[in-house]
Image (cartoon, rainbow, N blue to C red):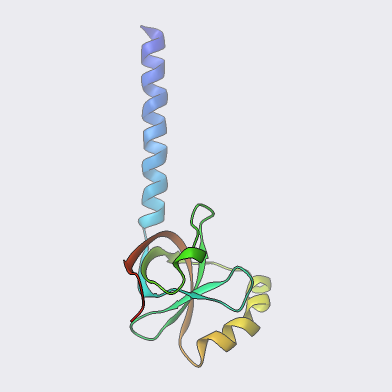
Length: 119
């Protein structure tokens, strides 16, 4: 009986940990829809949202964006917190991509294809 109670406690802690992690990813989440484009930076991707804002994308390691380039996608994530060093390294590329648009960085947790093309 003790083993069963112990296993139940371990399972409940595991479920609670997963729930807290999912809540952390959705709290303060941002949803962006636009045409996925290959950035000028190596491994870089971005979208221009309907309001004209440029979003530089930083996908979680389990997401692969390369095969979705040229498709209209909806992404969910949070505004990325990047160091001054990271921003300085990206600035030359971002300035060429944004063309005077408002800019933000998005840490992407999920991607959904809305349309096979951006037309």
